[in-house]
Image (tube, rainbow over all chains, first blue to last red; front, side, top):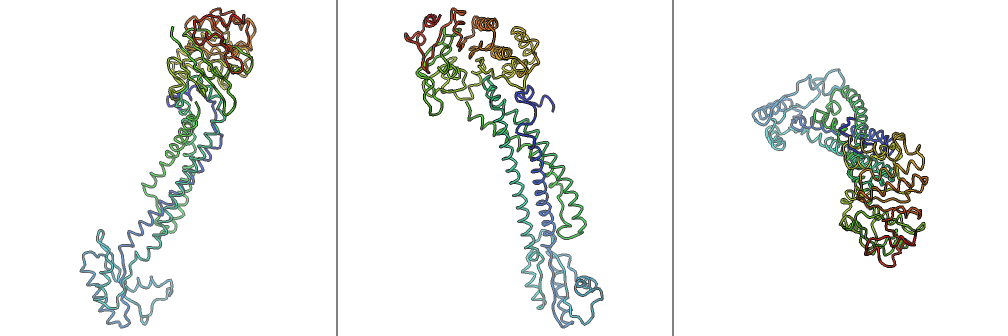
Length: 298
Length: 240
């Protein structure tokens, strides 16, 4: 490490070279960073996917005309098309044609085609204009007054339970990341205390000669900071590989929630900051632990 | 002369045990040389611990460098400790550092420039006959060499007070004489020296020294010379 970055106590080796508090710490920090990165990326990706799906589905709705009499059905469909077409807050008004109806029913009826004698409802897709209030109740009232057999399906209503689940999962991911951070801090504090115990006679001698707490604390802070950075970078690199592999696998789904999962530049930036956060967490914990322990001495 | 160190009815106990020091009262003028004598367990090391600020008294008051050190916040202690050189019985050398680095520690802690550190340490190592052992770690040094490193480390920063706990215990008589001569020279240059020793035969070598005798934690000062000096070697007379 560059000499000028080193505190005086490190430069003159006031404590022995080698790893304070055992060799396992960077590995443990690496594993914790790996887990935190996976939890955070999962939470962020789910949140982004949910956001993407919600923004698409919460604005769209479908009007069904369920009427056995074909003439009345056609007349009501035309009335609803006219009604929706005249509204400024509604766009993309589109009546599903026979081909689209067939592809919708294909999972249940197969590819054999739909017979003319099968009574199917008329389906009219539409969406609220971006920025407009999604007043689905008014649409329903107006549709029913123009076409008594009309039913309005609010897509957001179907999506609500999934959005709730995704919200819970997102907060769970954040909670996991916070717990992992707390566990890392606890492990670092234990390691620092062990090192303070091991080098108590040396620290006492340094104190006897007039060393200040901050001189000793700076050495711990430096050494633990480097170990935090090493572990953080290693954990982040491992997590990066895992995220890319999982991302590629999810990409093969093509659509739906899995297909919409992506981190976005904000997510990647947040993840890239993780080694820095881990380093700061490690060195701050080391500093505070040393300060507190030394304050208890004379 | 001003008083550099003053004890007023100082007592010390460790935990809930009996007092290891009782009613210690004495005054030491700047530039004095004091022998601290007493049998093993008399409290010499405990008294030194109070002076080098490793322990606070459980009662009484200690003034050092014109400040009441019993009530000073601990953040103020490092600056005072840098004015005190200490040689302990067990030397307290730092095992992973070479003899040179051990001696250089007080200067490096004080932030002295490295060029100056090297010059001072090399000069002192030569003086105490350790030039050949410059890069050797304490584990390889003999007991006498370790002691000389400890003494060199204690004096390298020209402390105002030098404390030595049995400093001649592990050296031959010739080296003991040289070390005492070194302490005496430092004393002549203005350093206040306190030497705890069993070696009563060394006392006459510093005719100007005063002697504080401890017996089972209490000081023997029947006529109060140490509490209210004239600083004469009256107490040490009986030991000669």
